[in-house]
Length: 71
Image 1 (tube, one colour):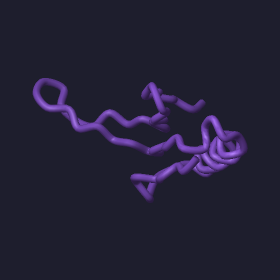
Image 2 (cartoon, helix red, strand yellow):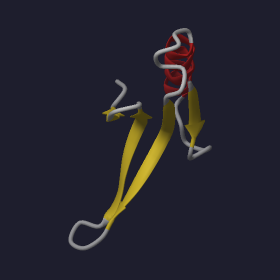
Image 3 (cartoon, one colour):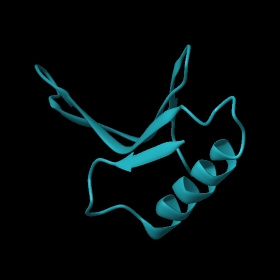
């Protein structure tokens, strides 16, 4: 599994370490090896209250898209 960091600056060290651990665990099995992850994913929002929604990790599996908020 590959996790790509979409925003290089401002990512806390603890999140980067969590991404590395998640990537290591999911890469260890053939079932999830082809999954993709996108870390620090920002989604632009228009209109009232416009701005960016920031997701810690967006995981794309073979059947689902999973949005993960790390604490």
